[in-house]
Length: 91
Image (cartoon, rainbow, N blue to C red; front, side, top):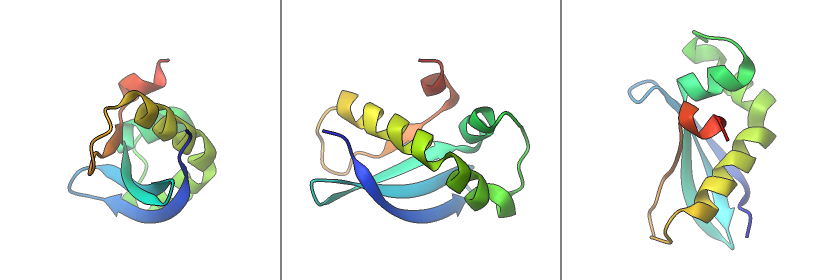
């Protein structure tokens, strides 16, 4: 079952990832995409931290589809964080 859109958490400078949440039948699923993966999707590199939210919004549908696909492949463990890296884009 596909995840549905929830909230934007924001850019995590420490982890170099953009964090967001999605819903699985009402349960919140923590998700994140690495800066490198988001840049690869956008066809650019070195995006400033301050521009990450705009970048995420422009790619949101694609990123959420990838997150939902990864969630469907993952074991059903409460608290599992869906993490998207560049290797997940080569599908």
